[in-house]
Image: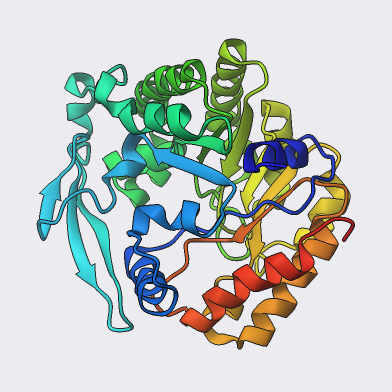
Length: 354
């Protein structure tokens, strides 16, 4: 099988030749692997070449407000959404962009606020390139992370928008409708271009519980997600919808299935048991992630990583329905040896039957 056939077979709950893989990287972690490839393997590659060089099965391009992270090199910048971002250097290593200014902190500005133009053709240049060059061989994913909840609080401020959901509901609905219109058009364009998958989502979970009640989720988000996913599938009926959330969102999984979600992405194993949810929902959901990035990848040994990979393949991969990936991007503190162990263990244990 080629990568596209492998991914689509797995997502149809059938067993391909091997478990498909996808490993995202932070810039520093990507540089670590690129340096290794150059010095030890004599392979000249940049960070963007890693998915092809390392035989990942999914190629993706990012769209929407999630593209504002790492968007510019200036120490502080304003993205097309009007959000102010600042580079932060962590004591443990790595640099990240954090939001330091929210354009709708003043609620009176909502009526005059407009989201960026989703129909801007250059927004989809990379996606078109991927489909033209690799659409026959790889699964092509349109990234739309930060879909409704996250854009709303990015624009408004996190604590402020959480209060809006309780005490300023008309405002919250109006803001979500503006973001909804952008995401509706974006996803329809990506589906029309020919994406195999759309990866959307919002972080609704903390390490151990939901950020809001199930009732609040249903009041503000469930029907909007359902309308989005239905519209995308009207354009391309066989498109697969992946929904990302970190943390423990197990109480939301039945609702997400009802909205049309095909794949639960992240599956953070220290928050939610991948084997358990495979047993409960594996006939209706596929799973993309499952590998621990909080303890095993940064602090374990290569043998620990191998054990983790084998566990996830054996408990989640049977019968298909698994895209093996870390539950978040590989971070700067992950040793190179553990990165290489991920790949070797996936090769060692990933062939069917598992």
